[in-house]
Image 1 (cartoon, protein in one colour):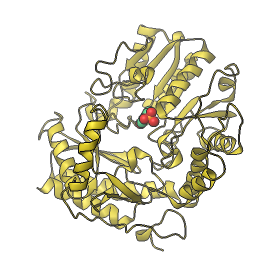
Image 2 (tube, rainbow, N blue to C red):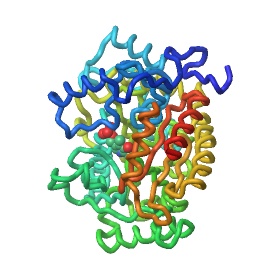
Image 3 (cartoon, rainbow, N blue to C red):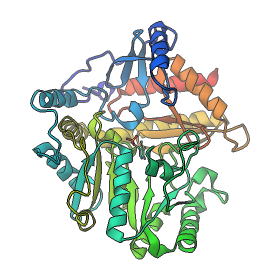
Image 4 (spheres, rainbow, N blue to C red):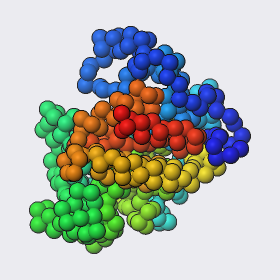
Length: 454
Ligand SMILES: *Cc1c(COP(=O)(O)O)cnc(C)c1O
């Protein structure tokens, strides 16, 4: 088998043809019919990037109700890192479903939950003693990290950053930076949340070279003056920002913030919900600058699409909370735990960390070359298989959300599923499954190029 025909589980062939195939308008007639039913049944507050109704998906393609086969550059928002319907995941989940589907870990426990926690403890950055527990969503993981940090420190303030995204619950939407669509009209927000400048290299006033140390100094100055360092329970940060537009903090920023936390007794919480599980070319994005967080939150890529999330932290912090203080009915559901165990095997045996690096090595030069020809591409950034381009009006850094939406539409019409992001809505982000066949990845890049040429 060559890298051209990379298959998720060693020795298995893809179930569906790994090809782009557009046989109707996108969305096609059957999807449009289903969209009408949806409009009558589901409130518009729940959006969809591309209303094609999915009937099948495998590896790097998503097939819709009209028989179109789309190249997947979204992975369900960085979830199906090991490929959609990964055979090993599907098999373990099916086997578990035939045995027991739920007991509630808080009622009567089972081994797979413990095994997932053991692996999270071993695989997350740092070789100190750790504990983990499991919940259902990224937001729930972040919310629990804050609960634990407050409990363990006896402090209340939580520091977050510009462009940050942490979820949609009351606390996590408060932690989230962007008003529309996440916060508008949903207040009042939770108290004791403070937002600091982010080291956003492309938009830093004095340029990317100074960005890391300057942004860290500004953030630490503001924390000290506005909150008081001794009042901070936790600093919550995404090692590469996701919804905020794949903002990769300038070098030195995260280490300086981590150092501040160490000195002041605040807990450094790395929100690895989007960056985790090989996505960025490291198992966790914090590894890139050798950061060892006090608490790590994980979700998305953890279980190949089954709803699962984790909170992993230093044993002495996690063990503080009284019995019964943490948990939830479905947290660590046995089907999701089996899926997570399969995902971790796939990442290791499939060499998916290296695959993610390879995807970045293919995508970044191609997109940089494109940026050289299209001045609307102001910035190309990201690591591994978490890559983005930021679109601006020619000759300026003024965001161009209209062009961004138009390029996304053109990609969709040609059978490439891409997502947008960013505080200004002007970022196209690419999150291919790490198992995408190389030829499909290249074809996806051709589609992006054609979308600009139009
Ligand atoms: C998606 C995301 C969340 C929220 O996860 P949900 O499972 O949607 O609740 C939190 N943090 C980051 C960084 C995310 O990307």
